[in-house]
Length: 336
Figure 1 (spheres, rainbow, N blue to C red):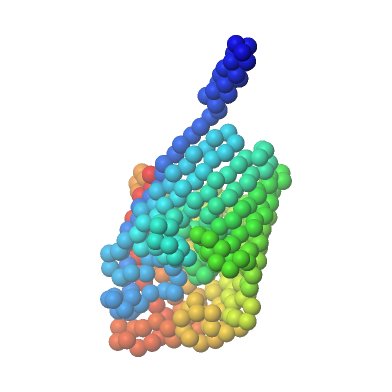
Figure 2 (spheres, one colour):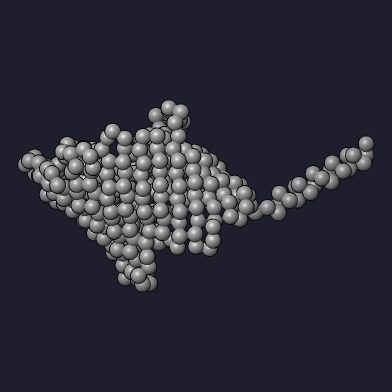
């Protein structure tokens, strides 16, 4: 019996020592953002005349969100809990019908099976598109039409494979797009991403739709970067969309950058509802000039945006519908 007890104690000590040697890292990070917005050729009141894209559409001084991200990273396993609260966060998790989940942006666990294979299960932000929900990872403060009408988040399981030093593959099985809490109909989506040298080819197949997306960019020089996003979406027995956006950005110093987003977005086979004209096959061209001035962890973002639609959608100061809208945004984003 003494030998058995001694053997068990010795085995336990080996487990404890192994756990003590394992590197464990807990992190807490996040951001807050707030902004001022004004139309230059339209009313600035409760009618909320604004572009048809997501976020940053309220008049006057307005709130974005607070974003708190808790993470744990071990040698093999870890988790991420990403919580949002505020108008931007509420818009980001619109697919969550249960009140307690309306602050959950991401919630997933992962397992590094090997150096080249990683499994993730839970709720994670989409792999499609150039822009993301968090304003800290976007150059422009307002968002594109392509981002706004592509998926925001998925719940499911995905596997990431490192194929070589400059290529990767991801495959996923997920609930239908934006069904993040549970599966409402027993149907599933398939996702895939192939990356090579910083360029990503994405595919999403839903039960009744599919989307093809390219996201990439190039360092033209040390100061000049050019980003690119293109997508095509088609839905069974309904309208779809396609579009392309370019993101040239120039850094004049470590603390100041200036950039442009030029986007063409069009609806196909009817009125998709993204642009809001109520007319089939509408399109919009949006040009956004943005500057980023960084002071420590604070980024000041002034922005001028010009939206021009193919049909009347925006209202002028007299309430008459017109095709164009010019607006100004001044945002502050603090990351920690």
